[in-house]
Length: 173
Image (cartoon, rainbow, N blue to C red; front, top):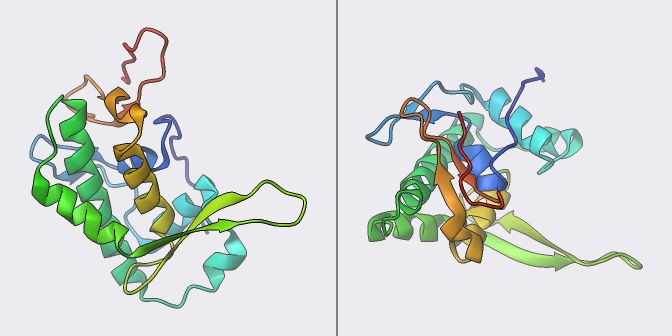
């Protein structure tokens, strides 16, 4: 799998995933960094969501998974770009995110002697590869950090991030 240089500066998994493309004012993805399934797989491994060994066990259609990833990323853009602008997300976009969330199962995994952790998996047609991103988006949407979602001031960038700066005035570019 090719080694790719991805950014991990958004302070939230779903926003780092969003930032694998830049966005035009109409919500269209530009400068695609996930141009093939191998790129998506590399991003998922680099994010720590999945290991190389688990990736090798995926048997689903790579083109279908890549299309799901694009669809999910567009929904994340629609919802969180609205929040970053101080708007209420369109109910249609929230319904689309809910449709993704309905395909994610969250469970507690606990090994003897270790701290339990939340893990997510997929049911139905959603690829398990995308479940942690869906869970991240849903968690961010209902967290107090939702109000800290910002958007890059550069109109050619439109990357999203959670602004954890002391003054709440982080810029991207």
